[in-house]
Length: 351
Image (cartoon, rainbow, N blue to C red):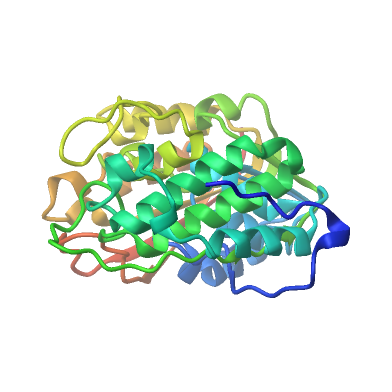
């Protein structure tokens, strides 16, 4: 199917489109409902002009940090999260009406006019309806083919909007470790514009956190690593494949590619990696989020680092305060989290 992007500014008629915000996605460990509590403590306990979020995930903590800190570093090693950060943050040029026109063109696509593609052949009838999978695959291929007609930020905004649309209709509990076995899948694919946050003093990295800390300094470093065995690169492999668009060979019922970006924080040496991270950090304050899922009945949910181990490692770095509150954890499956609490450690470093 031939489709010409509406990229000539003078030909665009003002249009509207629904929008979506940074926090509007299903993501394990999403801190959106905790972010006010986190910053009420940071603003009271910490001082400085720079902030680094080195396991940024959804990016909602980084977004909040832009309200209080002059310089912000946002880092995550997932490709899909990087696309979202580059779409949302910054002050690089993009034309809002041009992007709305393109998204509306994509929303007008009909599956009957499209041929099967890599995405529909692999994920149609499983993670998505066959029709939606054809549209998603066509858009991704078309976007890549027309990349040179867009500024870099325009490209990231469209791709990030696609990722959010995919997340919204996925036939899953919120991640891609499995899909619901249904005879017929009913969904309605629709792109919305991912709203941007103009933040001129933000730096974006895609690094393993223990490597990143040798490259940056910040007054406040916020740390929210994975603590259990669930690898984010495997949980969100469909989004990673859609982002990179390298069309890998897929394996198993869950249709996963060969493993990559596997975090050491999800393995038995997590404590050693965390100790190494804290030891090498150059910051006035270290703020660590932690939850007590180590009491979970699910082996995959049990924390690789215990509460007392976190406490000891941070106390060796400086004076440490611990704050806690009850919190209903985002449970993407059948795991039982009784008496769940969220902890926040604040360490004023002395070495």
